[in-house]
Image (cartoon, rainbow, N blue to C red; front, side, top):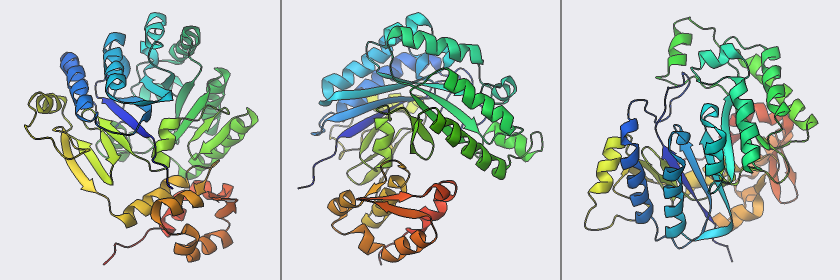
Length: 392
């Protein structure tokens, strides 16, 4: 019998002090006066979703900059979740934090409710931090990690970005080494994506900054992989490394294409074969949750829902393959796929698997289908081989 999966919650905090030049997320730098009302609205949406009959096992507070909220406001949100939902005995609660906000007092207060921190380090290089419009420098990161350890945090992630305009291999090596010197438990390393509407893309488009070199970015990825392996980290996902036992359970929920509820302005969710997106503007989000309809909306929708898109079986199957193959250490479980869809992956996609295996891009280890090392830099090519047409 197929065991029902545990669920996760993503809570979006859309407020920022400054907007990073690469950021295309739903964030605002001029709406801090709405924070109190926003916290109340988040708690109201939590209540509306609380009839979920399955326990949750992860909560992730992202943004934006969640560390702009007072510890008491964050505690109010988390406590509201724990009152309204059943939850697993081992509950991972992650909060993103700006290194500049990480005072000793703030982190001690945070530790009462949060079990995992994610710090936006991004780079050790001052010129890159300036290019990104980050408001911290590396000493802020060093101090943040120190204070986090003193507060009792034993699960700390650092984010880094590579493939940046003007970035050299030596600069990237310095950033990775500086991160390793801080002895984090987890490292996320993302290739820069020049998103439409961002200041960074505008500057590159108009020639103010050099176009990033994709070949150099590939070399940076290989260098980081070697440095992380030498330091004893496990690369458990294409962009993520961790010490044993410190894998991010919330992100694994995404990569296994398992259900999560999105709470907050602009938050995305995936539940009951429906993908939801909430209204973007905090003012509208607050208004929607003050004026509740007399009849409840079908789960997982709330008055804050902007779109609710049903996901057909074919699309869901492809997304499960796409996300599952990103898990380099665990791979895509053939048994779990069969239990979920009632057909064998190795039969349904026999030709694709044979072709990719002959090309040296896939291999099977016991129950799991995995990307080979050479496939990691061209993973999207592998994923597209499994893309299926809509059923007529």
